[in-house]
Amino acid sequence: MKPQTKGLKRLIHATRYSCQGLRALWQQEAAFRQEVALSLLLTPVIIMVDVTPAERALLVAALLLILITEILNTAVEVVIDRIGHEKHELSGRAKDMGSAAVMFSLIGAAIIWGIILWPF
Image (cartoon, rainbow, N blue to C red; front, side):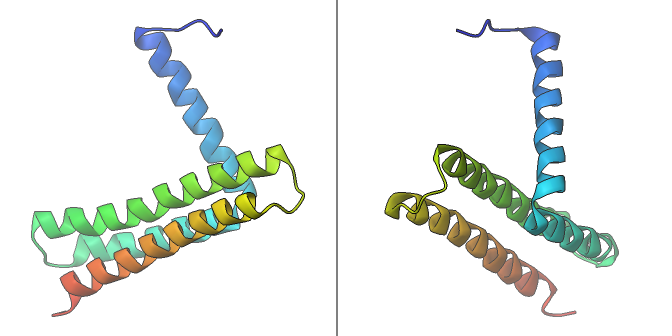
């Protein structure tokens, strides 16, 4: 059993693990890099458009949701690939469901952005 760290030491370890995960995502996942690029391209729009603070927060949250969903989808795929690369119905189903989650986060973001920015 792994000993539990507490306080600042735990925070430091957690931050290091998060950075390692982001580094692995950036190096090995083209979809993540594309979604980061999309978010960076849209960030100036969030800054420049005349919307309420709540609407601005929704625009940011929609982009973050895409990235979060992609991270979780990739985690599912990595775990399944660690188990084995042979075809299995359940493995395929899990990967397809993760992909569907990413698709819905993209659709949701597009809807949010469309509703908020439609008048512009």
